[in-house]
Image (cartoon, rainbow, N blue to C red; front, side, top):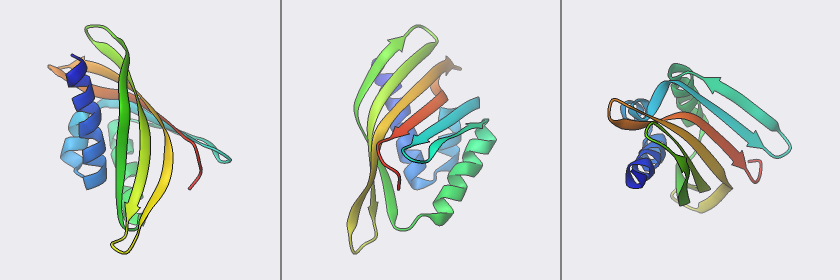
Length: 133
């Protein structure tokens, strides 16, 4: 079960970086919520519902420059039962413009996941960034 949870979180990060909407849609529940906290800027969200989250992601991709990657590390399952789980992961976000590589931000993700139709899906995502960017 732990490997399946880690796989769901990894699929999220890869789909987000590649703007792979079908893959991202598959790893999110219909009622997913996303909330972000940025120092000096407060709390953004929650962005509620898969359609709204996908719009948010698409909008973010249109304004980003270079290749942005979400590197997740120290992925830990903090609670779990047969149908729900919580996973925490550290984030390092980078941008590669082809001319330079830059660290954009660091932070901590908390994922709430729910098992349905044999798959773990993200029902709640909270990201607390260590810095504003």
